[in-house]
Length: 110
Length: 116
Image (tube, rainbow over all chains, first blue to last red):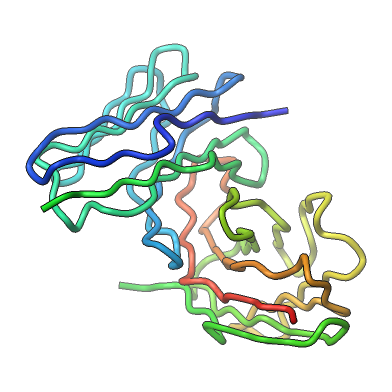
């Protein structure tokens, strides 16, 4: 079955520093979603990647999908307290649902 | 900006009671979903709904669960006889087309269900 592994599970970063979160799939993806969840709250859509090698940016967040469409990375530049939360990658398997990873908890130290 | 809204934000119920979680999807969306997240665990797919019927459901979505679109705007999840292990955050989502077609899914803020 489709499994998504996210790393690291938890990340503590000094404000202003850059960071990267990874998401690896056991199978080739039709597409990959990145969502952000604030603790105990809903999921906020960040980006969706569809093509191998694709890269998208939104403000200080950049996500890439590798050529084989099995690995994605989310990079935050010059992190801010507002970036704190749980980052979830979600796999689009080509059917009618998203399979999520366990998430990466990001803490930003002032 | 259009959004998915869920009510209530928090529901406490006694074991064995029926609960109905309500969602108002984005108005021009055609596909509706329920996901749940048990505290500290993954967000898990429960069910997808299109054209007034279930299009896909997970193993979690057993006979205790049902979904309905009673009118043109609401989408509900009913749990007939709640169990302690049903305690979780339940997320409603909607999309213009099937998420398998690489379509963005918009999630609501969630309903935290606590079964006591």
